[in-house]
Length: 97
Image 1: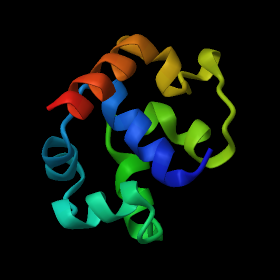
Image 2: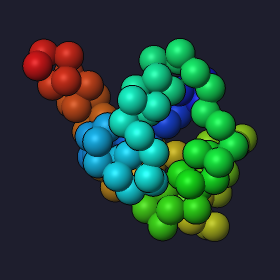
Image 3: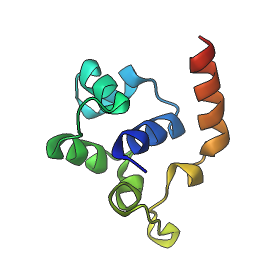
């Protein structure tokens, strides 16, 4: 999975809008929009901000390797409390609105 899709998946799994996500990791909204559209690559500093934020650190292994280790608390968005069902619902809602 491409990084742009990973970032969007974890954001949606946490139930965050683009603006809320940006506020949490202190990046400009226009930068996130460009990441998620694939217009620019995620830079190292932004990746560090995501992986070191307490809300997102559980996705670090998945972001870097696409692997999980539930025993170590490392999950993918599909394993988050909201899971893929909520991601799918959010995507449908966003597409409709």
